[in-house]
Length: 465
Image 1: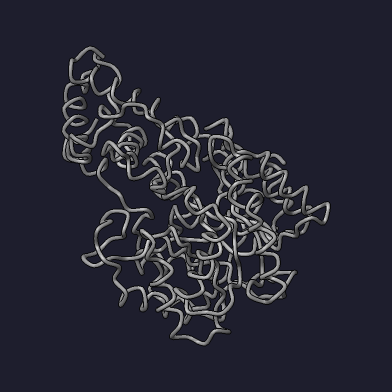
Image 2: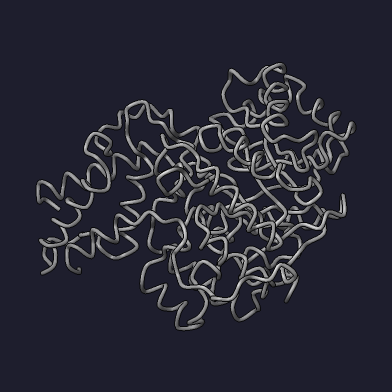
């Protein structure tokens, strides 16, 4: 399926140093733009029907991966801070009040605290008013045994304060150095997939599916089993956005384009749950020249809303997940989907040109998911990549010592790097152990990228660029 065919799937058709430092240290996931002062209207939320259970699911799903923490921000910026349960409760209440009914969590999110916080917030509402999605996140070999995996599932029920899970996922299939061996060890050899099927028969799981990152052979194998009747998938969670639609594999050969993933699900009638509509915030933090193009076309529409409209347009999409730390992001996304204005043909062509622009920047495809962390040698991998990418995006990466602005840009980059990432956590401390690589959903060759960045920084320091 090429970019022109996207709509067939649709339901509705150098600068001053201070400026550089500010740009290169901005870590917000979604741009903070003024939104409509009117309250979103719950009755206008767009819903999709799950054909397997007739669930009426809100097109906006709440991803409980970036919960607010005490002192402000999310656990990603302040991993040692406790979750701000009062704020979580308020935001969940606001979401439900305005039509959101799908909440996605995992035993792995927020240093293992997301399910507990989610359970507290949701248990204050009638069980029939929300759908809870969680995952069997048995990534660690210590959790591959049948006993350990069952204990993880049972603990999810306890933490979420429920006696059944609406949407249970095998978490991130396709990852690992040997994806098939890893998949078999996590779910097949221990008999746990068959056990989950039995739990579905017992009503303890209402919908069984998987989330996918990595080796497409595992994705294809899982769908082959579906075709053969060996296992039935009620839904599948995939990464879909207007950059990944055709460029995921171009950016990283080990990734899979979203157009292929969606088409394979759509032709089987398997509902798609969408993750990374903003690609970890990258599609809300686009370079100024791209932002200006989008604003010139739709001055009142935020950059982020373009991405959410794109992700929600295909008719086979059940819900689009967003990890909303801030109430401002929640309100903005509610406006986008209350109701959804589907992307039309002309807008789709425009977004494909925007995707071309972003691809040609040649960023490192990190979406700051933090799965690579902690690094055993203390490197802040996401922060290094975030700083480097932002400087590319904003046009502040000095690359020619012959230009008039080089001296200023060189100093600004080096000072900005030290401010954004403490020296002991920078790329030069990478020894290439590769422990991070197997955990990266984007399948980035992290040590090679660290070597590249370290070499570039050294060239700037030695003034040999």
